[in-house]
Length: 282
Image (tube, rainbow, N blue to C red):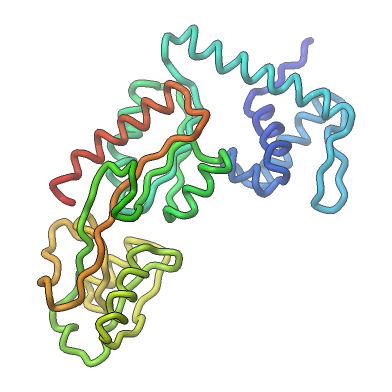
């Protein structure tokens, strides 16, 4: 019986070599390190050859691994070419898309659902993180598309939105303003603190969280004020302008990796269309 090598295992093997470590490769192919180790063990068992020599955490290709790497790249390239050619534009993935928390609900429920209907056999890996992390992953070819916030002067911005204060009005009477913020790095956190310091307004961090839904709950409960765009609490009115110092606006960016294919660009364009529909809220 011939040995059938699964393409997902070959992708994991190539990812380990290209990224230089199990940890980085696990992020790139969206599996845990233990699952990745099992995939490589399975590949070695199928080939009856060791592909890596291990010295602690350092992995080095064996002669068999070096030979297999060239074949793996060729198999994956031919596989992906066949999927696109025979499928007349249908795509089996995987596509890796990252987004900031503010857009997760709209994109997961809108863009990705629509893309899945267009490409029912596709694999889409979605990651929610801060803009800085997403752009770093995109630069390292661990994401295909990144959607996040940027400065007001960003050339490739697709939307521009004011930054406003949200919170209970009675908190404004306090001598030291309680803030509710996301963990660093956060563009809105830094904008709020910079604006308050520039106006000599005393402040303290009352709530710090990595999660946007927790931040929203804290603000709605009156635990602190925060700085976001209108997407943060679309049904609530921001605090009146002029009561707290103004902050610079932000823009939204959608970037695709340098090796983006037709399907990736299609998903990017679908994302852009959905983001444009958010313009009234922004």
